Length: 480
Image (cartoon, rainbow, N blue to C red):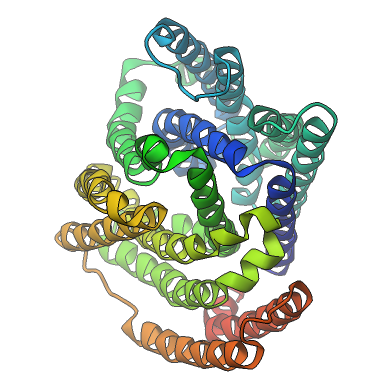
């Protein structure tokens, strides 16, 4: 846990530095184009790559022990190449009637999307797989180096060539591609040490039975994650003409600050507790699966409520420290982004129940509810509230997703909510609310960059201490 914790903190710091550098070098309008580009990439990576990756995670240990992993990873790489070529063909064929990202050429979009499908996916497959095999040190090192090289490459391209969104994203891919190679070499090396037997050639061959097993697991996830994309990403294409690229860029960056902070914390917790969860649900016993989920939900729900509250209270100070002056007005969007991210994390925790029962079809309805409600709320709220209306819509849609997830999954599982832990979290958040009130009353409107840095350093130390005290029983339990 110590290695993962400090490694993830370092990775989070680099990610936040990257955000500061990006806002210092790109204009809000270019940030808007970058947001649209990321939405295009995420549509294909979430919908057509992510579900297959989840299937791999579910079977990884068995494939490694049976000596099947090298052949199956080769199949996976072939699938990624075919998918990237198909997407490129679709973009070219539709280019006469549709432009994916205004202001970025079709060739750039094809190159960036295709390379993301292949290199970014392999990076996010090999390196996390090292953690699943127990090599947490390598997992942390390669994750940090990926962010560092990506930052340096993006900075170099934008500084020396042109401050454009496509060049920034190309730099990200340089780091991901380089470490995908290193991660792959290490993964296959360590996988050999975990192999318990050699599989015969016939068992390695792909057949209809295996394909149907894959499709049975994947197709509900494909529908589910594409619906999630509609809920969380499609707004960028809906509102670009309603509020303009500059306002879209400010909202996307404000939301991105929340997503980076909350996502970094989520990854720290998930990197340690998710492998334990998957190990526990290997049993087909639904009661044991529900207990495993309850333990994981207790950790995530209680800690995330506190983290999100802190991000909301100190959003202005966070914006002053993490963003360039031209993006400081995005502080209001950090608040809405924090609430929307909380909803995303909660829905993701509920989704693990469906993964545990290998019944991912149950994820479709909650995501469909959110996917329908999100555009509807946006169309209703944005004309009156502008970019703030986008935040409101995403939060309301997230609330609909949480409610429908709980109602639907509680029919198949005995959901044991960690109410006692949540009550403790509520009391702690009241303490941080009081701290924020005192601090803002003290400094008033005269808050400066240095004061903000001091505030956030003290606050960060206090937050980590509170979270450790609250979660130490679970941490010690897993260690022993």
